[in-house]
Image (cartoon, rainbow, N blue to C red; front, side, top):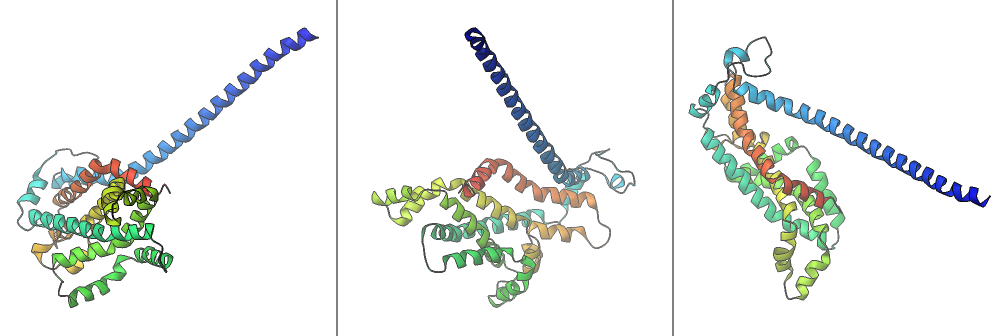
Length: 304
């Protein structure tokens, strides 16, 4: 009987090990299937998002006869750079002037917004004051208001300040409309940084402002970079406000200039797509260069 019991124990152990191994294999298979399904869904979404962009790229290299052809072509049959030459050499396009306007407006609006929202986000993160929750909710609700509903009020305010048809007025508007969301994001980034770090800096003799500049901002640099990229691209691509505020042809930004380049009669889709690709390229390059900082910054902001 003792021999039988001694023989049963190794058999049971072996059976238990096989069961555990099979269970682990099943778990790994389920995880692999979930990951595969996730990649398939992400691939489908990416394809849906990329199809219009690829079609724009294809059309920008096509000749007019192929663009107007009833037969659908998925790649340029006779690739040409004439559409880009038409845009760059057309005096009505004013692409260099419009690009300079877009760079100036987007860059200065981003810097002005960050100057305000870094201080506001830090105050919401570190200080307690009466009405803090109400103020924070007000910022969030204000961002949910569609910008088209703000156009009339913004137009009247800029008219009274004599800032219509003025790049500085457009910069003020872009910097203002981005304040609520940027403040919320920066508050999240500052929340993810332990308070003890800046307290230690102040114990060592630093001021509150010095701790913010020398300790907090370097730690929150990925988050600040993520907000800056979002603000810059948002101002770079914005159309409705720029169309309402700017009337002069020399002050138009790139998105507005595209619509004025289309013309009134027949639309030449080749040059229009080439112009659109020129406008989209800086934003794509910016995302490609800074995507690591942007993703890590966004994750740090939502980690707490």
